[in-house]
Length: 144
Image (cartoon, rainbow, N blue to C red; front, side):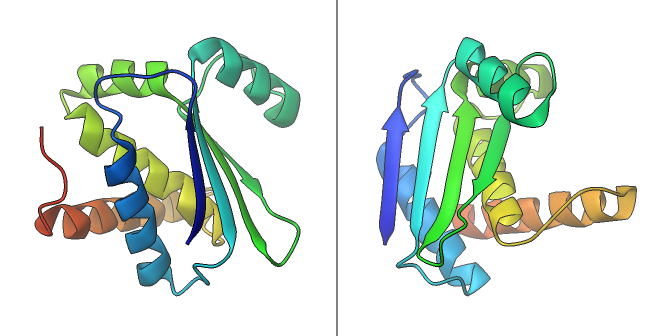
């Protein structure tokens, strides 16, 4: 697997080993070539806000941004705000480590072709994310 995880904004709930295991699981489940390069960067709200404005022309922070790799050997990049993940998990009363996996799945699904331009597609994508995280958690990899 050709994965790089960069944690620019550390948080207690971020576990690199779990992230790597989950991404390996995502590659297997998607049928995507696991030799493709994937980069995941965990940043703060300030940095994700800049990326969101620069690339999506949207104001404010977001939880995740996906950037497609336009080379056959590169799946893409996923930028995640650990600040937003922490805040949203608290608001939703969810385990932050599991919510991070849910958001990683969201970014990954975008890179393999999922979109949420309509409510039906949004619902389908959310369902797929939940299924992936639930199946991964059944393996007992995530604690806390």
